[in-house]
Amino acid sequence: MNGVAYYPQRRQPPWEELIRQQLEQTQADLRNKKLLLIQKQQQQQQIKYKQIQIQKQELAASQSIPRKRNDTSTNKMAAYLVCLTAAGGVPLFSRKIGDLKTLPFPVIGSLNGVHMFAKSKTVTLLSTATKDAQVVWKVFHDSIMLIFITTQQEDDKYGIHLLQSVFDAMVLLVGLDDLTRIKNVERLKKDLRCCFKLVDTLLYQSEAEHGLVGQMTLSVDCLLTPNHQVLQNHLEYFVESLGTMYGCLLVHGRLVVATKKWWTLSECEAGLLAMFISCCSKMTTRDIPIFLPVESPSVPHRLVTFCLLPGVEVCVLCGPTPSITEMEKRNFCNYWRNCQDVLLNTSKLYPKNCSVNVTLDSNILAFILVNTETKRCLCSTQPVEKAKLMNSKQCQEILRAFYKWICGSFFVDTTQEVYRVFHTRLKHSATETYMCTDTFKCFAQCNESYQLFLLFNNQIPTYSLRSISHKTLDTIIVKNVHF
Image 1 (spheres, rainbow, N blue to C red):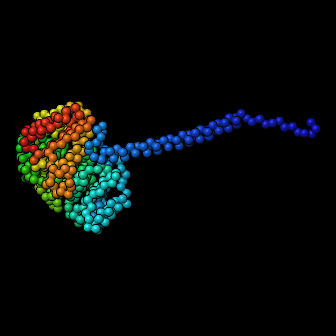
Image 2 (cartoon, rainbow, N blue to C red):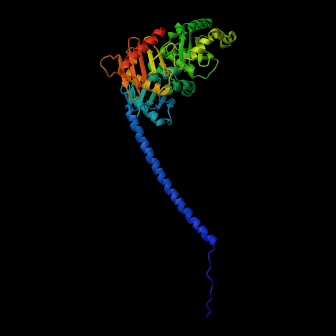
Image 3 (spheres, rainbow, N blue to C red):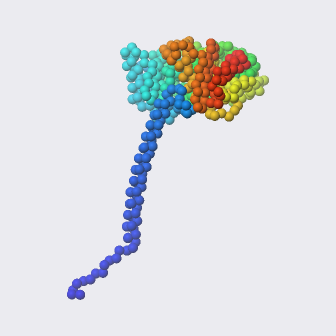
C-alpha cells in the first residue's frame, strides 16, 4: 500500500435518507397549501366584491315603486335611531334595525353638527338624502333631538312620523318634564331604558309578520268582530265598576271595543298604549304609571291591565284608587266569565282581524282600510282561508310600500300639519289607482271617509280590480257599521 491509509467510505443509514425525503415533501406540501390559500382568499375577495356590486345595483333599482316586473321582493330596512340632547349634543341612546355595527361617535357628532350649523344660519334642516341613505332630524321642545338614518328612500313625512312616535313613547313612560328640564344626563339615560322595548317595537313594525300599521297611517289598529255589542256592554259595566270612564279591550294589540272616553284620546295615545301593552311581558295583571303625551304629559295616570285569555287583555286608565290589591280581592275578572266563549271566538279572528261573516274575493292577499274621519284602520294579511303565493310578511311589506308610494304621490291628508310642507306628483286629486307586476297587482281607492289599499295575486284580470275593490269596501262597511 506504500504507506497510504485506506478508510472505507461511510454509508448513510437508510433512516436518515427517509427523514430527509419526508422533510422535503412536507416543505413542498406547505408551499402548495400556502399557494392554495392565497388563491382562495383572492377568489373570496372577488366574490365579495361582486356581491357588493350586486347589492348596490339592487338597492339603486329598488328606490321607488313600481319595481321591475320580475321583482317581487322588498329590501329589508337597515336603520339607526339616535337620541341626543339638543343643547350639547350628548347622546342619550341609540337603537338600530338590522345587522349593523354601532354608529361611531364621530358620525353622531357630525350629524348633530350639520343640524347646528343650519340652525346658526336660521335654516331648519328637516332631512337630506345620499346615494345610499336618508337622514331625518327633528328637535322637540328645544331639548331633545332625534335623528333617523335609513337605507330606504321614501317620503320624508314617514321618518318625521316615526320620530314623533318615538318622542311620544318617551313621554308616555318618562314624562315631559324630565325630557324638557334635563338636570342630570346620566340619570336621564337610565330612566330612558324603560322605553327601549317600545321604541324597538315601533322600529320593527315594518319587519313583523303581522305588524301594526297605525303608526304609518296615523290611526288606531282595530279588529272587527260580529259580537261587538256584547263585548261593548261587558266593557261598560266593567269600567263603571272600577270608577273610571277610560277602558278598552285588545286582541294582540288591536282594539276591539272601547268606551267613549277612550276614543277621545288622540290616535297616537291610543295606538301607543295598545302597542306598549302588546310588547310588555305576559302577565295576568299590570299596574303601570304612564303619561298621556297629548292630554296629560306631566301628570301620571295608572294603566291597569287584566289578561282574560292569551292575547286578549282589558285595559283601563284610572286614578290612585282602587289599588291593584283591592281589584284582585274583588276578582273583577268574574265580570267577563259570562262571555268567555265570545272572547275565545274573537281571539280566533286574529290575524284575519275581521268578522267571519265578511266574505272577500279569493284573489285578495292582503288589504289596509283606513277611516280618515274616526282615525281607525284595519289591516289583514290573511283575509282569505286559502294557500297564498307569498307569506304574510311579504304581503305586508309590499302593501306598506304601496301605501307609502300612493299616499306620497296621489292621496294626501291635508288635515295633518306635517303634510303641508310636501308636494304630490299630481296637480289634481286622484281617487283611484292601480299597479301591476308579474307576481302581484295592487289597487287603491279613496272617498270622503275611507281609503282602501288591496293586494291581489297576478291571476286576477286587471279590469276586475276596480269592481272587486268597491265590493270589498261595501262588504266591510255594511257589516261593521261601528267602524
